[in-house]
Image 1 (tube, rainbow, N blue to C red):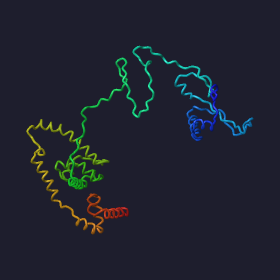
Image 2 (tube, rainbow, N blue to C red; image 1 turned 90 degrees about the horizontal axis):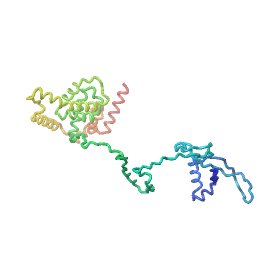
Image 3 (cartoon, rainbow, N blue to C red; image 1 turned 45 degrees about the horizontal axis):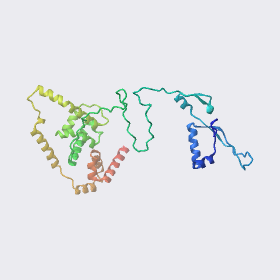
Image 4 (tube, helix red, strand yellow; image 1 turned 60 degrees about the horizontal axis):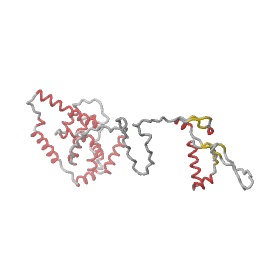
Length: 324
């Protein structure tokens, strides 16, 4: 290494022996230094024998120059003279010295880098009654969380799906939605005791002349908006008629609605294994009916006819539509 000129001979074997590394590792790290800009190629070596006295073989080594990238000197304000790897630093900016008694940064002792896994917490330094730490974001103490609806039993979910299957044919803009999502969106109306015809009339009264991309999400948003506006309407109604009471607020009326819903669930016959066996045995000839049932209520059709028969019916129905 010539420290005056800043050049170094590329002695691959000697460097590998001194650093106890392999030749491949030395080559790789030299490549890193060249990409970084810390080494510049000056002269390429040669394998030609120079025939020096006392040495059986002597080739020409590659010469590199140790350099500092120009952007580094420019960022630190260093003044250089010359070009390329022959440039030299002729001026270094002097940092300003603060001799203030309140500022103890000049007497601050630098600590060595910690090898612990967890870094140390910064110490709050006060200078002029101001802290150098960031202020925490103010958070509200009481976070309003949406209340989850009470869980529903499997029988109630099945009843909701049956009501949604009856509502969907009567409301055109809901026919592109699945039964499960539609039933979930109609739960507030079902909980009010409305049957399928009442729910269809309620949705039709909205006078929607377009088809929403997600009908279930649109219904949920509309019902939430109406529920938010309901307290204001109730206050106006009480101010206009202080002694009037709606029929839906009557406890007897609510009890009768719950009793009617329970009776409707009990009147519906429960499906048995004999019903499933009979439907799966004689449903192959009535594949059109099976396909229509699957299009209306997929879960109920799979429970009654099975996966194989439903797949066959849907395939036959799709082939029939393709021929048309």
